[in-house]
Image (cartoon, helix red, strand yellow):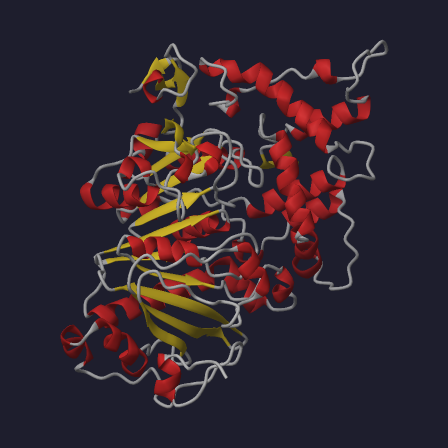
Length: 558
C-alpha cells in the first residue's frame, strides 16, 4: 500500500490513480477564519489544511486528490502516482527549486469531461500568478514549466488539457473533451487556480501571466484572442496557431515528399544536401558566414543546380519529379483561394524532415484524421492530398487560433511577447511572421504602434522551442536562462514590461558548448524585434555580440 499523502489522511481514505475519491468534507466548505489563521500558522500546516478550507463554489464537483508540502530539491515519483506513461516519456519533471504547497484537483468541465490540474504555491510568493500550457496533442501537465515559474515566486498552475497522454484518441466522439483541449481546460485551470491562490495566501494576485511554447504558444494566443481578461502578460513561443493549416500542410507533405512510396519522396540525404546548398547561398547575406541564416524570409535560393542533367557527373542530384516537388514545398498551401500555410522555411529543410518524422512516428497526423476529422476509429489512414483538404476544413471550436483582431487585449493593457525559432523543424516560422503582419493590417498599426503591446522576436538558429546551432537559450524553459537579467530571460522580460514599463528591445540568446551550460558559453547574440533583422558589421567570425546590429530596410535601429 502506498503512503497516504496529507489529503489522503485528512479525507480518511486512500487516493488511487484514475479514481476520484471525494473528501469526507467537500471542498465547497469554507472556514471563514481561514485567511486570518493561515497567516499565523506554518506554511506546511497551511498546506495540509487547504483541502478542508477551500471553497470553489463555482466548481462544486471539484475534488482534491493531492495536497502536500514539498521542500526544495524534492522530486515527484510520477510513475508511482499513476501518471500516463507517454507523458512521463515526453516531459521531464526536475527537482523542485523552492518550498511549495502542491495541490492536485480534478475539476469537472461538463457532464462528460473534466481536467486534472495542479497548483504549486511557493512559500516565498511574489504576488504573481502564472499559467503554463501544453505540448503537441498531449494531455500532459508541464511540470518542468510549473517548477520553473515557482523558482521566481509565481503561484503556478497547469492542466492535463482534459485528457491523459499524447494521443487524440480521447477526442473520438467526445466533443466536450475536444473542447477542453482547444481552450476550456486552460480557462478552467486559470480561473480555479486564481481562486486557490487568493484563498491560500489571503489576498488576490497582483499580476497574471501566461508562459508556453508550441501548443502552449497557441493556448497563449487563444487567451489573447478570446479571453483577454485572463492575463496581463503572455509569453507565447513557437505557437501552433493556424493549427489546421499546419496539420494540413504536414499531411500534404506526408503524401508526397515524405512518403517513401511517392516518386517525389526525398530521402534524409536529399534533405541534407538541399539544406547544405541553401545555407551556402544564404548564410553570407547577413554579413558573415557562420552557418546561421539570420533572416530566413529573405533567403530565396536558386536550386536549379541540384537538378539532374543529361550529362550529370555528380554522385548526387534530384530527378525532375523530385525537383518539381521540392519547388512546390517552398510555396504556400492554398485552399479555396486563401493561404493556409506559408511553406517550408529555407535553411530548415533537413531539420523539418526529421521533425515531421517524429510526428509520423507518434501517429499525430493519422490519429487526428481518424478520430477528429473522419470520426471513424477504423479509418485506414494513408495520407493523401484529400486528407490534407479535409483537415483544413475541420476546425472544431476554432482550434485554428488565427483571429487577428486582438484589440481587446490591447485595450485592457495586456502585453504579448511572441518568439519563434527560425529553423523550427515542427512549426516553421512563416506562420508567426504572417500572423504578426495580419495583426498589423487588421489593427491598421505600424510596427512602432504595435510595439506598445505586441512584440515578436525571431530567434536565429533555434529549432522547435529549444536547441539548434544558434543562440537559442532565452529563458524559455527550465535550464535555459544564462542569467536572471530580463535581457536573457523571456519570462522575466515580460514581468519587466508589464510591471515597470520596460519593453524588450531585443532578446539575448546564449549558445553553450554541446548545449550544456556546464561546458561554457560559445557565443551570445541579441535577437531582433520583428520586422528588424540582424546584420553583422564586425570583423570577426560572428561570435562577438557587439558586431551585430538590428536593421530595417538597410538602416540600423540600435
